[in-house]
Image (cartoon, each protein chain N blue to C red):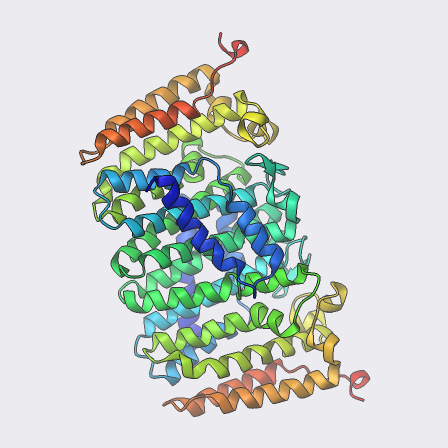
Length: 289
Length: 289
């Protein structure tokens, strides 16, 4: 079964519980709308790839962990798009959740998807309580305070911030959780994977900053130029386009070099290369100098 | 040690992790502000009372469960007060979180406290993975979709709703979780406690509806008359004041009669009576007819 099938099937099973006839219909619809169709599903694919590279000893636990990480990502997108934050009218090529369902349902859908992430983990890993405890800890740290994605978003409202700390929390934390969860679900030791996860998370943030600056809304399915519009710190504003592209290349090389020795090392390397190539925006002539 | 001390100590320990120097300061401050000082802490006191009535075999697990339920309640208050919902300027006798910290930090603080609830449970029950799995399930059901407090709030945006279903989700679900968690933490069987929890939750909702209609903002520390202002379904709008007071009395009697036989049955009955007496608003002469 492909990673894609495993991810969508797991997400569908957990989102289905929200479609129970006893649930309020708008909220159920908004939850499904926020989760399907997905974007690149990069984080859950990373989780399953790493689990597979480590031998994938508990495939259903890995699937639950992958779904949980993706649901946390979906929840954060719903809230980040709200008028008080990015005020983004579109997401994944369609109206954002608050544009389609109103602000109230969007706040509640974000909250509900966050809870759903924990339920996904519980559904898939309840039979392995020891793994469940570890996975709950990894997931919570990557989302909460002090160092998770919620804290990362909150850094934007501080008078001063450290770009590395901000990016680590806002983006790398959940990548880190995807990698660590994959390793833990496969019954391996996550400490060896820390460098890989950190470099990859940072690379993704730089790629995202570059895409926000160089891509079109049609290419991304969401508004672009947001970092500059919201005066948000970004790799591009700190380093410029050319140095950011160079930095991205170095981070990808570092990430690939940090993959620990494991049975599926070569397949994982190939997947990361393809993924990062897809994410690196083609520079237009105006920026090519 | 009193229930109050056990609850505040557990909440402080979990909120302290958000005050790590590496966390964004406004968010940390907003989280602490939303949790302390508390309101009546009714849900965690209920959880510990029930655990004690059942023999309190795992006191630290009961404390973790009590803190988790209270944190879910605090998170819901922060989001419910937002301008797009109740637009409440005050809560617990001081400015609401969004009034004090802005909307963005309030949305993020609500999200972070929700995650913190799971972390509280994890901290206190990680040594008892089997209990942890049960408590996670109880907590998630009481908060998420289809029947938890988030779904309860979302019912307000449906064209039609059943008042009992709405109240069960909006209020009774978390009372139910407080009771069930206390029973489970003590190692007892929660099925016998279902009627008690349901009646008590419904009683609290009726009392809350009456207080919204009959009390002053000074008495409650938050705006009153909100159900009527937001055209929200309530026991008072459905039944009128007098029938609601009568219904409240019946629900309290039913709840007390539903307490299963257990070592601390009498103490629990006394506590519920005192609590419900405190919550029942004294009727003013204009309503006394």
